[in-house]
Length: 405
Image 1 (tube, one colour):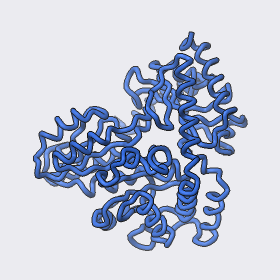
Image 2 (tube, one colour):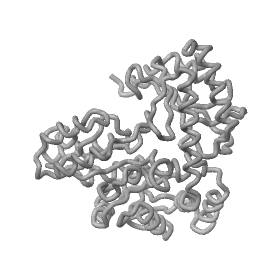
Image 3 (cartoon, rainbow, N blue to C red):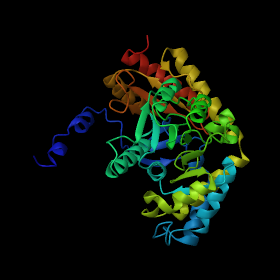
């Protein structure tokens, strides 16, 4: 069979487009933060990860412009060779201080960060113990680690152990089967990107201590959202010293593009010299790094933005629930509205968009059967008028589709 036959047979996207229900790849023509222009119409953005609303902040935009003027548009090399700027070093120092860790390493994207950290640390005879609902970047890192272990002579997938979602009893049951003396790292999202749920870090720490394991938390959806001054999951629980490593992204709170990991200096130094995802990738661009530095500065100076963000998210969670929608209770900026039916999700997405509200449609296989949802997320820069309109449109659409009575 021709390798490309599967591509020609893939018709689902075209069929959804023909029905006018396709919710993906809609080009944003102008971005003002809480309001964007798509297909010539102004819509309220209720699906962005721009949690503090900094992508449109004048200081962030000015920092990017000045960086391009000083350094050009790119680094034309990897960090390992010609791609390190003083901007990279500055941001690493700022982030390590912000998180209270010894050192930091930048990656070109948040997605690459897990692929740089996990396979570099987990080798033959060692284990990554991972939540089954972790983000795709962690899954990719796990697959690379498993493949490398298999290549080195281990059994297929021997290096990767999965446990039930946020279930610390099952985590303990799985990790207890592994050799106590073997190197192990437990990896989890801090705030899970689909549900908005916060990991049970206190019980994870208890298990890690008991079974000689390290902990890596992905705080992509946590930084700028939870914890003291937006310092993420470990800070949220007061477990900064017990959380060995934190990784994250610049594409959300930090209004840019790139990724990072913070931890002990010896670990960061090891990753710097062994992680293929770092060594063989072009380094983050000057504009991206300068934007992230500016955003970090705003986060440090204006922690009240976090209060506004959480106030907005709590208002929406409460309002949608009072209407009769099934809404997860987790206290984060991600507020999923669970519909449980793919067709209804797509129809509701269309009506919401036509009503001036943009949300994210999550359908199978991205979510399990029965968990099809409209995932909403909020910004510090949403005003009450934006939030009230989102609620009004959800009420109208819910009744129209028959989800609400």
